[in-house]
Picture 1 (tube, rainbow, N blue to C red):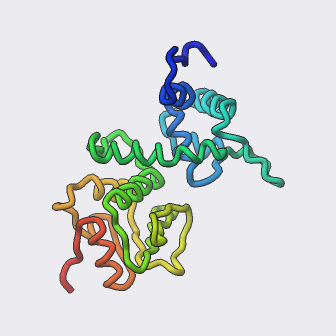
Picture 2: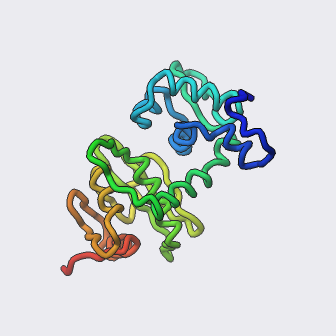
Length: 221
């Protein structure tokens, strides 16, 4: 252990922070929770990180057993994935996300890039925290420019995955990451669906259930 990382007292929380408490480390974990990613994918999604710093963080996370190289046969590029220990940090990421939603009052700043994965992870956490539980389950698909994500409620919890499950989608949302982020940052009393830059498709009853989950309602008609 690097002495500069040690808190020099015994505590399980202190031990954890010695391993993952440095800037960017948990954000690397966050971006690997949906599956393996290339170095270039991580550099893009993390925004302000430099290649040198990302390399340092990946090496450290590999050394402490949180990240490993994905050595799938036939793959020429280097991909990274979480180990079991890394996957166990999922609830930590969700808890910090929920704390930010409740107490940091996030809003989109003019100089910030908004990533679809980050916004939808916040969406998943928000739905779970509000105990939104569709009685018959639900599959909601978001179409962003160039990418798609699916949120499913399986009767126990919400699960976010990359990709388009439009074939069995109850509701399809066509929007942009900034538009959806602004919607989530709006107090529930001021939310409107469909909204500016947000378009819904699906059975009207399914759309109504979707809108209600976010504290909104559909216009008459």
